[in-house]
Image 1 (spheres, rainbow, N blue to C red):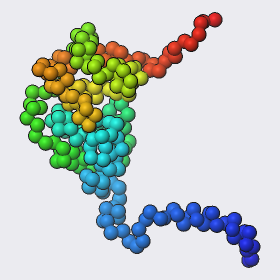
Image 2: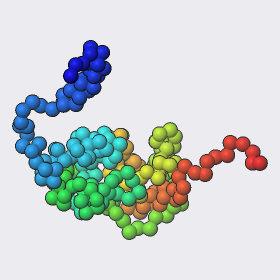
Image 3: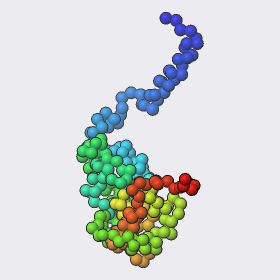
Image 4: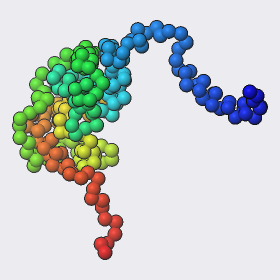
Length: 236
């Protein structure tokens, strides 16, 4: 079979594309034993975290769009059972998906345990100032009016305009009450957000204060966030 020069040149782009597909792979057998493992057998915290968590929570546990896992106060606040539940089944009312096999994900229960243990080992540093923090969850019934007062005094200086306007219903649709409570208590030091002690200098927020603020923010939620669209002209 004869090929003309024109035919050969027309095939050149396809050859270049095909050849580039393997450029990021090393020549020869893999040297990393975990590269030979089936996904469900991987037991390295670093690899599991990088593949499943770092995009949202940051490569080192902070600086990502989601909660600051490396925050010592967050680690002191949340319990192992909650961490396992959120990793396995996701967190309702947020963008946190389910990663565990029982909920349709790809991580085995053992791999979820590896992630929890790794977070504790890396980031659960003793923080004596966290001894009297409000609990992770609370049975206290929030008072919307008092929560609005606390928010106005303690929060509006940062959260009243621009991208920090967390009272916007569209933002509240992306975050659960539990996530809001967690941030109010533990803060987000990677973003400069103070914790429950620093937000109101000289008078830390109590469990009831936190519950009231969350009740106020919850009252601002919309059943149809983003709608109805504002009218731009007179009705006809």
